[in-house]
Figure (cartoon, rainbow, N blue to C red):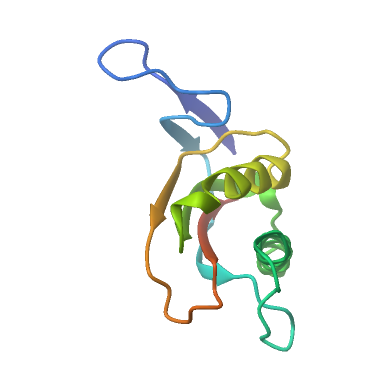
Length: 128
């Protein structure tokens, strides 16, 4: 599988260090669509703080990816749903750390979550 970054220099605003406009995936044999994943522990209890929930989210995503024989290196698209816009910086830091600095196409939205204790929800698409 080959992943190519697509950041055109004309006709669109520039990408940043932690953001790319698009990834082209060539030769993938499998796609994995991961549902919105919350910061819940194995008993379904949300982490007490934003940082706790972000840690749990990424732990949960790694476990889901592993069940398909994949890692975070297979993530090619990511969407974050934040309960409050003030969570954006912590979410971005957690994403950059989880992906080892590898930028992927990402969108962050502020949305009311179904349960008020759920502070962030992240969904990903992975290719392998």
